[in-house]
Image 1 (cartoon, rainbow, N blue to C red):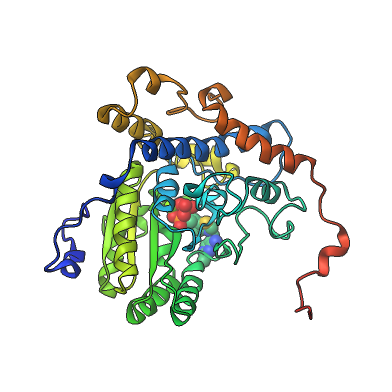
Image 2: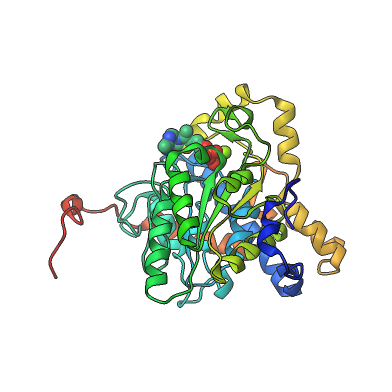
Length: 375
Ligand SMILES: Cc1ncc(C[n+]2csc(CCOP(=O)(O)OP(=O)(O)O)c2C)c(N)n1
Ligand SMILES: [Mg+2]
């Protein structure tokens, strides 16, 4: 259950048996898959930094380093037909959605690695044909709500999408990813309040990485747990250890089950730490405005290392296997391709090569999709 002191979500569970942990049903293969996905998310991050340093990539990068457990754990708890809305800190989620169905499964309901790299490189292969940068993409077919620059702006969209699905008799849920800073936005409260009143299946993930740009959490909110935002709406507010992919998976599954049963929305706060600057333009400044000891402490609990430890304890990984591919605890400048499973490197190689070789959109495309086109 939630690791909060007050645990108000218990009132929704009155008379129910304590839920069995969703992770109890995972097999050894699931554990290996989760570990490989953590590597994939990490590799995407460090590889883009390297590509930029090599001069092959332009634009600002927003690192998800150290926060991969949230992306992987949350996505693993969803059905292909569920909606997600990742934002700037969750770039790997766009191509990792529905990875559970097979990374190269043509039926998978998620963007391809070629599409996401096409977006990052600003090429015609981008799902939005490179009209905007980074996470500003979406896909109705892939059930990905378009990310906006206005923080918390995807929550009302998720509310609308789930209301439409419900009117159409579907039982899909929507998971929105948000930083803890965005929870102070008016629209965060308006949208979740409406979802609570209408009992809509919207799960709001709060990635509490301790910082919103240069603002630490104690200047953002007066309570320790941002999950307590839920209390004002009368909905469950769970707290997960964002560094433990299994804990995230369990809490998200709990919220999804609650939603799918028609009980309405929840909030899942995932505690984590932003390893680097807000974006790579902020790396040098972040080193000055964040105390060194805090950064050191925050980077200590690497989600890859934590998952390996759990797998060794369960006998799913031998200590010798766990020592292979030691990407954990290393920054982008220390890590090499040898620190990652070769299939992870090969997967991203495909995306990067496709993007590097693709053309930029033609200038005449500028007016496309601006006005509604007939037929
Ligand atoms: C409504 C709004 N206000 C300000 C910004 C500028 N801005 C972009 S990201 C960011 C910090 C977000 O912090 P948080 O929500 O904690 O997410 P994190 O970057 O830590 O993942 C700010 C202030 C914005 N995009 N939208
Ligand atoms: Mg934050």
